[in-house]
Length: 272
Image 1 (cartoon, rainbow, N blue to C red):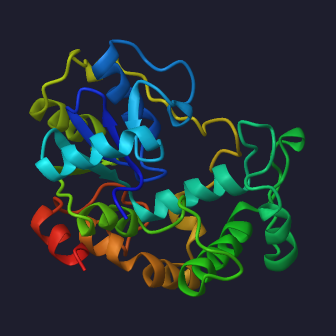
Image 2 (cartoon, helix red, strand yellow; image 1 turned 60 degrees about the horizontal axis):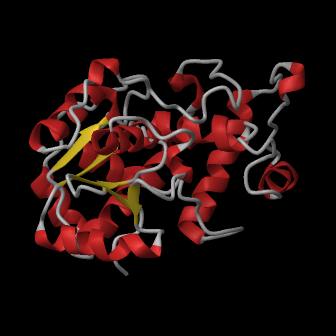
């Protein structure tokens, strides 16, 4: 199976397992800058040169060799599951994508018809009931993850532990896993362990939020979106994420994790 979702600098200094909706655009641009002393002109997800990606056939050999030889700093980042799934809804479901269309073509019309989701339009200022529609989307996300119906789960709302486990199961080992809520501290720790061709000043790095402005802004506190049923669904589909990465299931408004991530625990529990 190899190492799907893995990016690596051409110098081999940094090896990153991408987790969608967890600052991956900013991390990718930092990696690109650390090799070339400049940012990629465009969305880093579109880059086909200057950065090794497992999806590019010519990159698979170098990535696999580096991972198995434990060269470079292997890392990933996680995010509060409540904030992550809510961001996914506002961006991918309610928002308009970079190509000017809805995400995945007929996905949103299907959600409107089968789950009663509303998404609003930029022309009317995104006037729709975000709370009601999000809760219906969450039911759909649970159906895709638990039952793989009416479609397979999308990478943007699949559990973080699922993404992170593929790297471990196929023979990789993480040196660092950090929460995006402590981005400068976490990414600074990664860069501090790496020897990069160009130094990176994190304080001067912009945040490359490629989804910003594509959808409606969040209209309520995070906790307002999660009633008892919604929280039950969150535990059903993201229990491992809460447990492994230390986030507070009981308080959706508490962004930061309650404890540090135990790398040994993550590797032990995601190795199966």
